Length: 406
Ligand code: DSN
Image 1: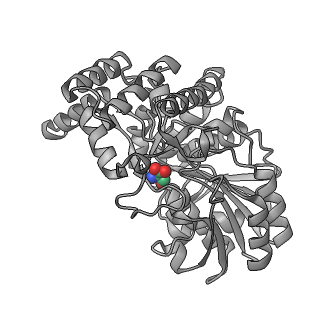
Image 2 (image 1 turned 135 degrees about the vertical axis):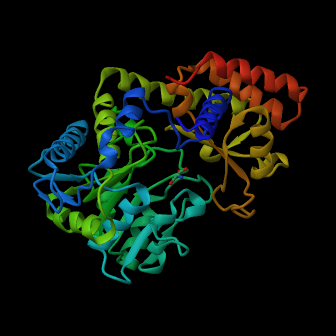
Image 3 (image 1 turned 120 degrees about the vertical axis):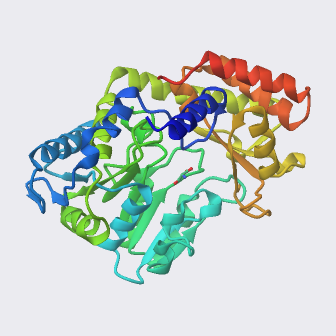
């Protein structure tokens, strides 16, 4: 092994084992997923789709891609007669781009949640290609409840007549009512795309409502609550699948990363297990426990709580900025990300909030008891309640009790 790289890998492993990871979009895949990711499939070029490749030597590539597709449809109980899945997108952003490329005419309207209220760059933000090639019709959350106001969305959709509505979220702590989104899209003559990157694992486990009965297209990354490799999937109703396949390849990508696809297939099988359902339930319990304890300690939780895997904490209310809070916590070994909160008066580079998620530490085996302890540690760091070295030691001891699964 390359000594310099090996040293850095081991250093990163030690960093991960020695810190409490509360980044809502991160997780730890199984050893089996990592093995598939580092397998000989890395070497193979397979432009095209199973049975229709441009290079020779792809009979086994076809098997792996077909298996991944079969497992993806099975995980969400989708009938191959009605739904297709494309397993080739390299990651979430190219997956979303492919959907618009296939289904929205140039300059057409994408109605997506504002980035600073919990959307994503690829939901039509002006700095992203998705906001340059198409026009974003941005929606927000209600200023009082900090939740989606479905009535307001309906009015906006009827007025703007977008080509596609995106029900997708990266920092929204509440359940999504996909049925309402479906009704809004129908009454505005728009397509509905659900970007479930954050909650794909929760949906698979049945602890969050499913978008599939209402959406035309569902995109997701595979490395968040789904606990797979970094990659993405595009599910589509049969009517749209040919256009989407063409948009992925040859429209936007070259050869698929078969090693990623093999690793995705492993994760999709794991996510179908009873253990995974238990895991997903625990993610929610942990988020609830963490939110409740932070609230008890006097922190304002955006929207008043959580119904999923993440919490948004308004640290500006107590005179801190998101950046300084995140930096202080990192110093103590607690890894979170600074985040805007709805109607933030501060800049995205130093916003008012912290986004805190429980999927990764739940993978490492933590339960409600540890969440209460973590809330106390966060509170102690941010309010300077204990000597810093003492807190760092406690974080290290706690994180080492729950090592990575390899
Ligand atoms: N970077 C991801 C997140 O943190 O939510 C979204 O792409």
